[in-house]
Length: 442
Image 1 (cartoon, helix red, strand yellow):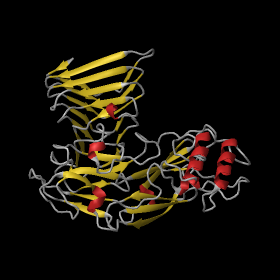
Image 2: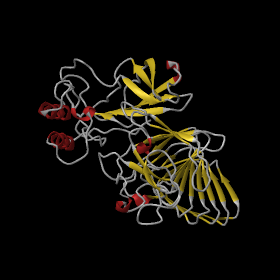
Image 3: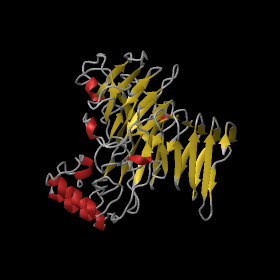
Image 4: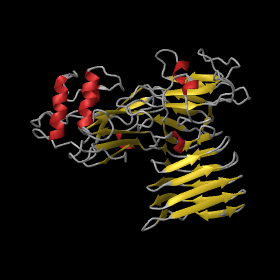
């Protein structure tokens, strides 16, 4: 029990137990606990903050349950690095509670109650950060939203004098498998989805990269980008003119706060988190194939041309990282050219390939798992059904060509069903991919 004092546990890296156990930490009445790169393993841990209390970590991840509860509006969870929650770490905060993160904020929860921050502020204050998007897309029908929907009362990006880049990613299926998730920054004072406070604030010339993902925020901006003294739910893509890739976010909020930032939506291929489900070659081993060019977000329009030695390539799941042989620039992006296809694995595991521009921190991660039509990181008979449903226009998520054109013919048809079966059964030179999985991004 830490009450009204500072407890420095920054040298603690792991809470572990050989046979399982429980840990309880209460931080109360202005208490402040410092932890390092915290890893919780085989210990069920409960951390409660109550009244002007702070939990500070360098980073946080766990393979056993950790429940963090902020009890009052003056409590804070701060991470100088990343919060990698997986599905083991839950966070609950009341109105006014604050979560502050300097690295990536990622999670795999499917139940929005496990990340209950709909009344809290999320502050992103790092350099280049990924932020997982996990809410169901209800468009502007705010009265249809049943819960926090993995949203926040307010997203604050950057600090005065420090520009942050927050890149939205949809690395995990949360509410609806196979359907792109959305981010809601919202609270409402009436049934018409109006009033309250603005859901987005940007400081120091920061950048929010939304790509193709939908973001809905309470804003005092109409469809023409003008303030109209009405705070209402706004789709950020609607702020852009047709064909535009950037929007200057510098309006003055009703409370007098002056925003200073940019929202950008560069066209990226393959998108972050995409999984190539197509054949790695013909059944006889000829024509090896896979992505050989990959886009990364890069600031500036056009951005400066970086050298190929500024990039780092990592893989998980097996294989040798491809080398970068060329770099070209586009609108808010760079395209790296590889010396060959990204690796695809061995029939037991697919492969994730991560490319990072080291000086800026911009990064992307794409997967290769043959036969994984529905992109759920598992190749099995369900992928046959997913492809059949796609061909029959059955209700369900839309699928990209890299999920359906399995034989790489340029068309998706019945022959692709046969090729999925070939891949699952190990026909020709193929490894048998039935039951193969895709690891996490490095």
